[in-house]
Structures are given as structure tokens and as C-alpha cells.
Length: 465
Ligand code: URP
Ligand code: ZN
Ligand code: ZN
Image (cartoon, rainbow, N blue to C red):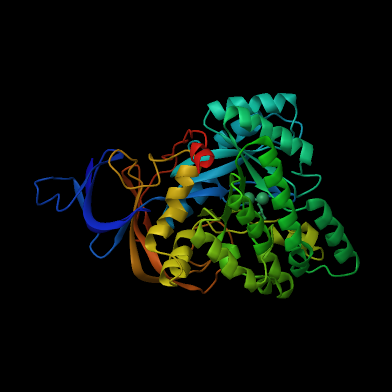
């Protein structure tokens, strides 16, 4: 099958130019001006005049079917990757979970079973480590060899995913040897639980107090601590879902002194705020960790994205229905399952708030949503760019189309949207995954099970940067 995408403005992290793209099978075969005029024929031609042609976006932080707070994140690999595709995201990297007492292998196998035969677009895995011991340390090396080279540990959620400093340092020492990457959820969970318990005990039980109790200074402290541990181990460290200027200041200071510190933020920390949590129990829709922050953190995070102290934007997609799931925390914010839906909206929110909003160039937008994730997570140049030989994961993107975000029209399997009623400019018209059109003008044309596991290489980009 040969597909010609004609006359679009190809936007990569490096620059933009009007050209045609010839897709042959699963990869990009040729890029050039007026390929049709030069005698190149195709089975199908997609007219991209007036549109961008960008590399399929990559979301390196999702949680399909994550067990949390006595329930499971609602999207499956089928519904989650389909929703992602509608939003221009053609690859996700999801977090497999090692349950306490089980092996990494059991956790990884369970996640392969969830995804295989179900995902409509490509996927990879990171591994959440709940126990660090001699067996799991050895298993880390094996996972790196199998294309799962990143390990998430937590200074938050005592009694659930929490690891102490010794365990974190030990895991970092292992990645110093095996080339893997430690990803950190950096909030001081021990201190947070003290404040959260005091807050709830004094009768403040609304979801809003989830946001109040998780001080941003606790995020800054933990961010500094884990970066220092990584410096001691001589390895890169990646801070997930960075939400506050306190944490950003620590990442910037570390990078300024030459530390191999990297971080992502998420749309919810750029477009939503603590104010959104104020509406009684409705605030449960916005319960996530780290929590939403006061609006005055937004500009700092945008500056971080502009100056590359934050390297990319991921979603931390972890959807729970309001009805029946978020409701588990009625009367006690500590019992609301933590997480927000967002895999479908990241590309458009970033385009609207970033490019249309005049904060970043369209090239930086592509870098934040696709190229940097591919580079830092071992998929470049197979993914994350538009170049000959790369996977034909491509999006024909209309930078002028306006759409209104709503649970009534989104494709995520969750009963609310955090951005209900928000109008954004920019939307995906046609989405290709390895050469196949999987979304065209609002219709899904892909296939359940067509997504493949992406065996990723180690984070050399992180070590070199
Ligand atoms: O609230 C969140 N972020 N839920 C998902 C789990 C995590 O910590 O990433
Ligand atoms: Zn986390
Ligand atoms: Zn997460």
C-alpha cells in the first residue's frame, strides 16, 4: 500500500517546509516537493493543503487499567489507545505494575496480556517497582534487555507504592550499571499523610483539601532529594508529572550545575488549578497527585517548557468515572482514587495554549509532544520525526479547526471531562499508525489489536544531554 500525503506543511522539531510524504507499507519512503508531479504514484492521496503534517504524538505517561484506591483506571488498552489516536497520539508508554511481593516479570506479563490484541496503536512499558530487593534488582537488567528500560519509584503513597531513600538509591545504582532510567514520583508522602490526616481529622474532608494538604514545598523537597540521590549514583533521573514552581526550581538548579535531571509536566498543571477543586464533591473530578496548584504556577511551568528545563509534556492519563469511582471518596478526600483523564486532549491543548497562545513555536510543540519523548525514551528516529525510514506514524493536523472539548464527544471511557466546554484551536484530521489510516475526519478506521509492543533502547539521549 502506497499513500501520498500531498502539499502539507511538514513540521518537525527542526523546522517546517511544504512538501509531500510518500508512505510505503509501514514506513516513510520519500519526502520531497511535488512528488506527484515527478511521476510518483500511490494507491491513495491525502490532500494536506493548508494543514500540518506532524509525527504522531507520543504520550510517555499513561495508566490503562491501573489498580488504585480499590478500583481500576477505566480505559483499557483498546479504548485508551483509540481515544489517544483521535487526539493525534499514536504511541503510548504505559506503566506496568509490580504488586508488592510479586516479581517484576509477573507485573510485566500482566501488562503485556492487557495490551496485546487490544491496543489499536503502538505501546511500550515502563515498570513501577514496589519492592527493591536482590531478586527485583536482577530482574531490572532483564527488563532493560527486553526493551522496558525505565523504572518508576515513588516517594509518595506510603503503604502502597512508596520506596524509602535506600531502596531508591539501590535502584539507581542498578541503572548506573544497566543503562536504564529511574523515573520518580517526587512528593514527600510521609509528610503529606501527616497533613492530610490532620486536615481530615479536623473535619475538612472535601476533595479540595486533597489539593491543600499536598504542599508544593513537599514536592520541591522530594524533587531535590531524588535528584541528589541520582547525582550520588551518577545516573540520570526523570521527574514525572511535575506540577509546581517549587519542583521546577530544583530541576533547574540541578541542570544548571550539570546534573542529568529531566522532567515532564502535564496539561492539567498548565490549564487547571486548585480553584477547580473548590466546588464541593465535584472537586473529586480533579483529584490527582501531585495536585492542581494555584494559577500563579502556570507561568513558571510555561517558562520551564520554553527554556527546556522541562523537556516534554505527557498526560498521566488515569481516568476514573465520577459516578461509582471518584464517589468512593465521598466524605473523605483521602479515599478519592487519584488520577485524571487526558490522553485525547494533550496535543490540542498544547497547540491551543502554546502555539496559538503565542508561548511556543509549532516546532517546539512537536518537540514537546513527540520528538523529545521519542529521544528520551529510546524510540528515536523510528518515531518522533518525519524522515525517510521512520515509522509512518503521521498526523494531518488542521491548525485552524476549532473544537469544544466535552465528555459528550470524547472517546475516553470516562463519564466526565476536566476541560468540559473549553474551545481549542487545532485538531487532528487524519491519523496514520505505521502507514494505516486509523482516524479520518472523526471516524475510527483502525483495528483492535493492530498496535504493537515497541521494544525501546536505553536512554542514551538522557546521558548525553
Ligand atoms: O494521580 C495520579 N497521578 N494518579 C496516577 C498514579 C501516579 O501517581 O502517576
Ligand atoms: Zn505518580
Ligand atoms: Zn502517573
